[in-house]
Length: 424
Image (cartoon, rainbow, N blue to C red):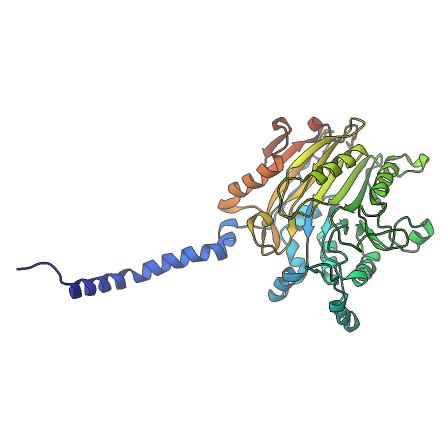
């Protein structure tokens, strides 16, 4: 007797076995295919944080990178039937428990609910640009509701719609409960013009840490489009074009001069700067040159943006032996770009502690559907490692540590903000 199966019998047997295994195989395949689409939700388990500020922090300043609240970010909010404020759902507690919050706002505000304005938008697009961004007034409201005290508008998108975007944005922010830096009605405005509501594009805003310590902050961009630059009698953003670098130097010198000498009496100088190459993790030569320029004229902290990815933190020494810390790029904070590097983010927090010491810490974030969320779940160790590795890459090992889920830089050991004391 021949026990071997012929071809037809083998085929029937395969069909029977396939039917038995079809369901479990299909379920496995479905699970594998779902990972790219649902991966972050499955592996992150992000929640709204509480108690983000330790008791020993006397004063805290929070800083973030690029925020774009138009395009697909606005579309996602509409599709979810939620206000645009949703983008800050997971981070507002960090800001509420900070004394000062600032970031880069990369979309002009245009009120397209006004029929006359809506009709102008398409014709107002600058023809020397390929990408045009704008947000509606509720985006500005979202910044205020989240707790931002200031935003820089000195970047390469604020005049995407020419004079329409300039005037609409200035009209919104002029009366809003938030300071803007880096864009204005002109440069070198008179005191009378400023008193009447005009905004100086190169103006330095100041705020107090305590009775004895004043901080100055301004916005500047190395990345801009022809026609964006503010000048005397011309509105726009504060750029290097025309007298830009000379004006930047003058503003930095004036900021640190004592008030009795006609200055602003600033003890700590912070500069937002839009610079570098998009999607490049390292600094380019022009960026390094500009950073040294800022250090030479007394800047203490640099908040960098534009590359849409995190870049290493560096420490530079100025002409007079002063030391400056440069966060070359804080990456995206709210954006709709889709690849991993553009979704890795941080909140940088400058802390003055009650024992007199100073630290800069980085809270690791990941963008999920354009919403920054603290890293969590089984992917947290991997994401934190990637984020921290980039930030600390150019720092001496003795200056940093990972503590309580943050990368912490010892500013005293680094020689940053020497002589500044904010103890109670």
